[in-house]
Image 1: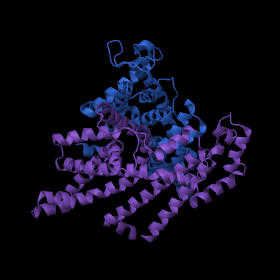
Image 2: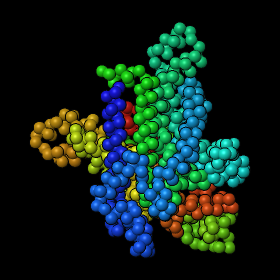
Image 3: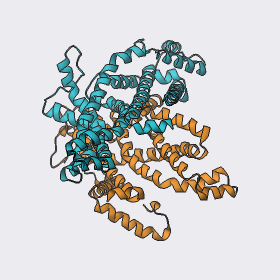
Length: 316
Length: 293
């Protein structure tokens, strides 16, 4: 286990290092003066010079990359060259909103998707199973921004049941929660379909296993078998997928935050792109990638804890 | 579809069987219908559209559906149906080259990784993992923000963003055949690595990759539309679906029609393409035939 953990952590370090070299050097891959590319050709020479020195672009490329990586490891992702605020402070300010959105979305997906999958598996090939299957594939293929726009149109514009714009404030928790419903549902829809499908498939596999047949022959009730024995094994692959899920949710969150006008990592990224604020773009990319590899590792570890078979394989 | 069959003599019957089994499946039928409609609109779109996609009629702007404008008009009085129809060509002209570019990039990374293994493989896998750690949209936006959003750049960036999944499939496929008898025989006869890879391994790993091409098209369409929606993909006044969506979103409270129709068009397109791809995979992959029955 420790060897495995060490290997995984080494791999994560390598992946993040390569990504940072890539992001640090990215600006030099584009032909032309990086400062002019960032600021646009109309930037005055003195302003361009101040940006150049602030971003360290006047140093050799290798030094720049080392500076960036050294800073990033110590929690310094550079400064926004418009507001001169540290990028980490800007990200830290909005990150809670995005994490709440993503975690709520993932929670909704589990709360709705898992029972749908279990029901489908227990009533396999029934009319409802087929209906759930059709709904699932429709939800899976729905791009997150389409889900967001359709929810916005229906519940905020046409029915006016829920507020459409802004994330609200932590000081008004009820209002904050109301503003969270539509965006998190928009993020969750695709995953509801995906989890329903995955749970159904892994449940069906387990319901055909020998130990379930034995339990049944011992006269255990269906409910007990389905929920106590089968579901416990069926959630294992689901956990593995959830780790990847959080990373994907962060991609979808950009659209959702822009559509619902929420502050967060996505809108920060979007605004930075509109103003070509490279330090912020790069900083958000590093944070998103770090979140992705870390949640992936956590999912992998809990997957091992849940499934004794993998632990045994790892030892041998 | 003939590429999926192996021997020349059996091609016709295998194809007829594939189509018959596709039509027996309701999802496959729907998918085939959607893709056929897309192909017709791709080829004949500008001729079929009732109005020009750029034809303005300010007097009848932001209208709902009517007999003259079946889906209504946008903020410049342009016919929404015509713009969506013409948009199909733009969607596919971006999506298809992006996916083919991703295929080529994926092969360039996946073939050597799978074939040589060892240090080459480890290095390429770390690069793939690094690319994979950023969600497709974040990677594409980061690159586009720097390169600027010309049509060529959008295609290039999408190809890079989609390439890792192709590389993974290529790598795994090469792994599964690199020690097979025919490859070992070639090597024994003194064939070079390049010759073995291109003439013997590549043709054998093409089917799963072509399937991935088909399955990636809806993703490419969705990503491209998303980028244009955020203002970093295809630029106005070109009637790409993302541009129509962005125009509509700016006025979603007063005139929701543009957003509604574009969302429906996108949902049907991605659903249809995916259903067709999944049905084809189930039919063509012998290992999966079992779970279908």
